[in-house]
Length: 304
Image: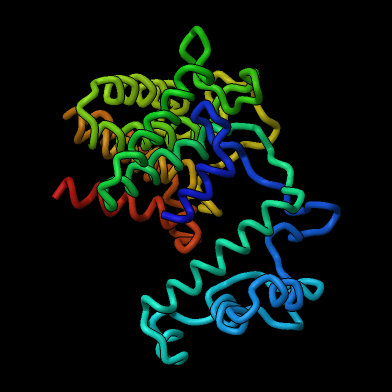
C-alpha cells in the first residue's frame, strides 16, 4: 500500500497518467533527498533516535558518502521482541519518527521528475492497482486504475485508432510497440474482471485485435515495432525477460486470457504461434524466458 501511495503522490501527473521516473540526484548529489546522516537523524529524533536508527539500518558510516539508505534491518516482529516492546509500541515510535523525517525531508530540494508517460509502464500500473484494490477491498485503487486507463484512451490514441508509445504534455508521434499494446490490454483485462462497465472489455477487444493484426505475421511471429513500422537493420526479438516480462510473454499471456474472455479460439492460436516461434530461445535460455514458459504452461492447462 505504501508503495502505491508513493507512486500516486510522486509519479502521477494529476490527469491520471504515471510519469516515467524520478532523478537519482538532487542538489547535485546522488540519493541526497532520500538518505540520512547519523548526526542529522540524531538531532531530529532525540530520544527516539537509537530505536528508529536500528529499525531503519542507520549507521554512522552509512552506505553512500556517509549517508544511510533506509531499509528494514530486521522483521518488525523480531525487532520489537529484541527491544522488549510490543508490536503496537514499536509501530507508535516508528510512526512518530517517520512523521518528523517526512516533515524534514519536505524542506529538501526534491529530485526532478521525468514527466513522460510510457504506455507499457502505465499498463503495468493499471494491473497493479486493480490487484491492490482487490486484495485490500479499497475502491480508491480501482478508481485510480480506471483513471490511468482513461488517460491513455483520451491522450495516447490517434484519430485512426493507433496506440501511441508515450505522451509528454502532448502526444508524441511514436507508435506503440508490442509491449505497449500487451501491457495496456492486460490492464484492461484486469479492469474488465472487476468492473461492470462495458468500456473496458470493449477496448480490450479492440486493442487486442489490433495487437494481433499489427504485430503478428502470417507465421505467427511477433514483431516488436509492428508490421507497419519502418524496417530496422536488425530484427528485435522481444522474447527474453528483463526488468519487465518480455513482449512475447506478455502477448501470449494476453491472448490466452482473451481466448477465455471472448470465447474465441483464434486468440489461443495466436498465443500458440508466439510460443512456437520463440521455442529456440526458450529452449536455449529458459531462465531468461520465464514469462513465455508460464504462458505455455497456462495454454497447456487450458487445452487439457
